Picture 1 (cartoon, rainbow, N blue to C red):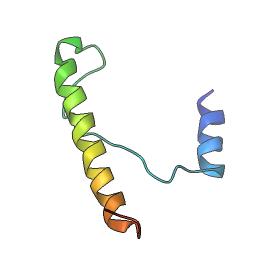
Picture 2 (picture 1 turned 45 degrees about the horizontal axis):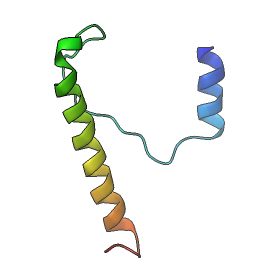
Picture 3 (picture 1 turned 180 degrees about the vertical axis):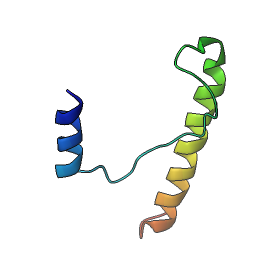
Picture 4 (picture 1 turned 135 degrees about the horizontal axis):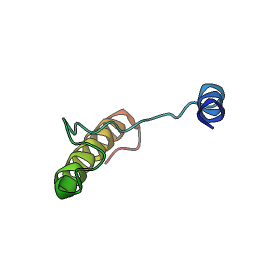
Length: 59
């Protein structure tokens, strides 16, 4: 399954990938969910700022 996903990513890579800075939040650290979500929101906001700055139609 992993090799299939890796091959698909190799053939058709995404234009953008969000990589939130979650530090040492582990897979089972459910009590840190709000922190993980905030990191994801910050990463998305940063990417959005970058995309808006690169777009000729930016507002």
